[in-house]
Length: 334
Ligand code: MRU
Image 1 (spheres, helix red, strand yellow):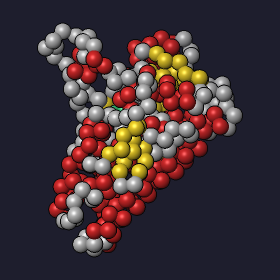
Image 2 (tube, helix red, strand yellow; image 1 turned 120 degrees about the vertical axis):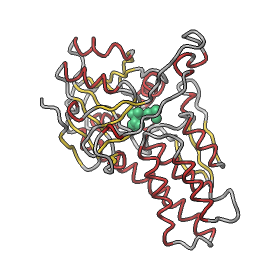
Image 3 (tube, rainbow, N blue to C red; image 1 turned 90 degrees about the vertical axis):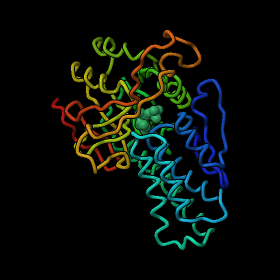
């Protein structure tokens, strides 16, 4: 995997600004946790596992921004970071985990506190690498040589600390010698499919064809899609899965055309505290991302806009969940 988009750099977080892809490779080194929050909000770093990792590093970065590490300071920092984006459960999960790592540390010992935060953030990052690899291994068993796979948004290396979830399955199957083609939905309105998935697959030498979101039905009707694999931002305990807006319609189409629909996500994306997708908070984004995305006005001034960033695919439309712990059957018959 050639992509190195997120890592610790001394006491800073180094990240690839994904809003500038595919045109420019701009790396940022952030030494203020508030800048990391802004990067998460602006989707400079995005994808559920990646924002969890960035959030964990943000707590460690914040620990260098004051000489006196009062517990109240870290608690306040943690709650600000957790509020950056609501849907991906990985974000709050990772922040809670680094905070929990301090339970046996004397918080009056500033150096030990900082070290513990960095160690836990790096452990989360490393575990995500391993979870991606495990998802890849389990998922690759479902993929046959010669298949064409449709994906939505970007659930690749750029969205995780490893090889990705949905794309990780594809990389692993490719490494096993399977010849695969990918169809990437462009993923309106922020074009993660067009800007990121195509770029990432090109880096990895995998054949990719870009299509507008509305073209998936036609492609499926023509018999050109063998399976769909997407990532998830939060999976409820019953298996309902929130992912990038538009995923639900792809799942409905896949069922109509009898095409397997797989959701690939690590167990850190599962929220066992909620029963169903109805309880998943859905982020709403600003109108300008739809009316004047990428600097070009495409709707009249003052147009009313509805912009949920994610939707929920009910378990009944999911053939199987591919997790780091194995493949779990979904609720779709056939
Ligand atoms: O708004 P984004 O770009 O953060 O949305 C990302 C997605 O919806 C991904 O599919 C999801 O986080 C899975 S990433 C492995």
